[in-house]
Amino acid sequence: MSLWSSVRELPLHVDGYFLEPLEREVARGFTLRRTVVVLHGRGQEGRGEEVDYDPRTQETFQADEGKLPFRGEHTLESFSLLQAGQTEYRRWAFESAALDLGLRQAGLSLGRAIGREPRPLRFVVSTRTANVPGWLELYPELRFKLDPDPDWTDEVIATLRHVDTVDFKGIYRGAFGSPPDPLLYSRVAQAFPDAWIEDPALTPETTRALEPHRDRITWDAAIHEWSDVEALPFRPRCLNCKPSRFGSVRRLFDFYDACEREGIALYGGGQFELGPGRGQIQLLASLFHADAPNDVAPGGYNAASPLAGLAQSPLEISSSPGLGT
Picture 1 (cartoon, rainbow, N blue to C red):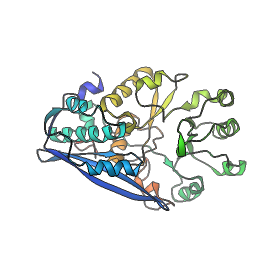
Picture 2: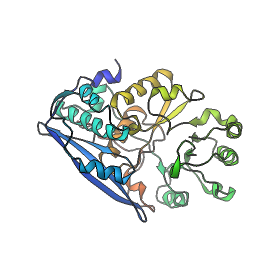
Picture 3: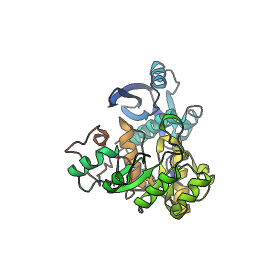
Picture 4: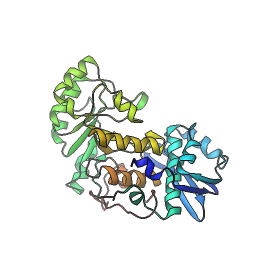
């Protein structure tokens, strides 16, 4: 049975929904704003998180609270069809909330519904290069996902340890993107021979630079459904899976099924979730790829400077009813 078949007929009673604003200063002068969707019915609540980075998008969404006609009886599949016109992030917020609510109303955990048990979750920390020594002083076994920079000198590279993934951000556009740099790609790939190489911008020059390391190339920003994998220039050994990019639960679960069928490994990633979305991506990672270098660390690891007293990897994940544990 497919994963989607395990949950598509899950009954869902919705009395209505409301929205909860979230915000947090994540860097000096930069406050991240998010919105929690709360679907409610029969004494239960299901939560999802809208992770769009544009504060104007969040403000507009919050201003339209309660206007969508969701009241009544649904299945997860019929509720999903109502979200077809939403952006992927908005759709994921509503669909993850619906899955959460439906499971809670049924008294089920997601693991029980799909026949899997959550396992202790291995995670890495995505942070600024300058913070790595401080984090390692507090947590000597901590591992990292880092964004290489042209300013990385040989001396800087020599100080970096426990690097599981290097993210070149060559697929992103605008402020988040980085231009192709064959020299940087080659230096970093050689310096970290066991790390995954994420989202390089493939040009004739960078392709030649990475040819000896092609089996370590993995993708993130381009992956929104299984057809995106089929469109890649070559079949990868591993991919980064960010649930909110998929929008619908069905697309995500079909992707999980296809990767398992084709022997493609996965590791998880997030979108700087501030609320229930963080627990959701941790739970999904623990169900489908617990032993991978998952970039889904507890929120304390997003601090501007290293903090003591945080939960360490591997992380025990609750299996209580619902998705948003």
